[in-house]
Structure formats: structure tokens, C-alpha cells
Image 1 (cartoon, rainbow, N blue to C red):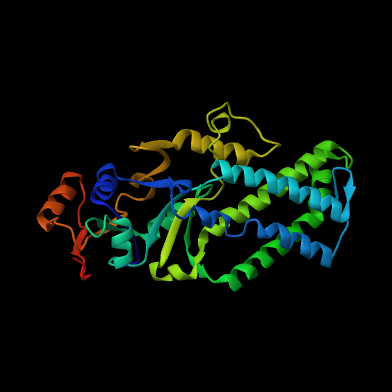
Image 2: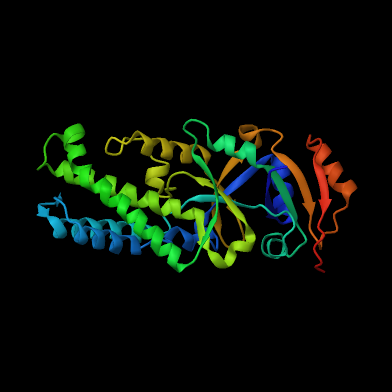
Length: 319
């Protein structure tokens, strides 16, 4: 059976089963937040290096060539860096493993082996993400060393350069009709900012090679998650003609909830089992230090309407 396993404490794991929903948590509140910046800020340097090697006509805010690109890069860098520092550049993520009984996962995510791991149908999760206009992505994590990271940065920078070669002309032809208009510069900056944001969100599918034992998959939002209340909770508006932008804000406005802890407020996005498939849960693994019995787990599952879920016990030697 093709399953992905989410490790959790009993409180969180049974909460998932009881509520029949999973929670994608704000990555800013996790140890994985630095992976949002796996390509940042090096991607900016690489874009400029590639432009200098093969320059082309480029205009921005009354400047040309290298100076124009340098201005665009500096403005975009500062905006994204400010958002990262303030925590406004984020995403909502849920992590899985291909392994149901992995000691490092028990220790790190299941209350030191006292919790459970829940086996979800990969097929149903993929189907949800492949729906038309789905806001979710499911990606298998690729583990990379420093050499591979530099290669990815080079490849991504080359893609950005190709976009920049025709972006201004496309804006003039399709939106402003005026190459000298400040609106053209504004749209160029907005679209370039979006290109960089998409690259940073895409970096969530990468992780340093030292973690390769985890065999991780990640479920996350396809677009950046905004946390500025003026944007998320304010009136819906078009942002420079971007319908997708307002769709994303509407989604967050209707979905975002909060988990309150003793010392923090943690935003999350719930995803109901009914939206994925009511039979999305296939297995429950009991942790190596858990005292949960099979009968108690069966009773809990039956009370919440589950049938035909296999209950297994960790074979990991950990006491």
C-alpha cells in the first residue's frame, strides 16, 4: 500500500483522527523555516552574474542595462528580506515520511516515541493537489548537498533571465501600451517579485542531504502565505490585475485558524478529510514507548466512525 506517515504526539495525532482533518502549520513556527531561504539571497547574485555574461536590452525606472537590473534586484531583495525578517513571508506545511516506524521521527515528532504515526493514502492526497485550482502541493523532498544547491540556483537564475528578456515587452503589449509609463515599471517589479517568491516557495521541496534518512514528503500551499491582516482580512481587491493574488487571499481569509499555546499563537490551515477522501487514513502505528493498547485504539476509531484501519505496533527498540 502506497502510504505517507505523519508522526505526532497522542494529543495531536488523536486530535487529527477525532476532528477528521489535518493541519498545515505556519512554517515560521517550525525548525524548517530556514528552508524557505535555501536559495535566498544567492539567487540575486546569480541573476546579475548571468546578465553580465550575456547582456540584453533591459529598462527599469529610467535606467538601462546593468544599472536597471541592479535597481530591480535591490528593491526586490529589500522587500523580500523585510518580509522574511518580520515573518510575513511564510507558508503552511504538513510533513510526512515514507517510513512508518523510524526512530528519528518517533523521537523528534511523536513525544519521544510515546505517540503515533498515521498512514495516509498518497493517491488521495495527490488527487486533492491535482484538482483544478487547488491551493495545495504535495512534493517528495529532494536532499541536496552544497554543490547541488549551487546548481539549482544557477538553473533557476537562468529561467528568471529568460523571463526578464520578454517581460517588459509583454507588459507593454498586453497591459499598459506605454513603455515609458511608471505603471510599466510597477508591473515589471510586481511580476519579478512574484517570480522570486515562487522560487522561494519551490525551495520547500529541497532539504540538506544530512536529513535524507527521513524520506520526507511535504504538503504545502502552492503560493506564498500572507499574514498581514490588512491583506488577509481586509476587503478583497485586485492587485495590479492579478486574479490569482486575490484568490489566494480569499482562501486564507476563509481557512486560517489559530492554535493557542502557553507562549505563542500559531496560525494553521485545516484540510478536512471530506475534502480529500473519507477513507484517507489507512494505518495507525503505535509508538515504541506508548502504552496505548490495540483494544483502546480500536474503540477510539470506532467511536469516530472509522472502519478497516490497520493498527500496528512499532518494532523499534527504544525504551
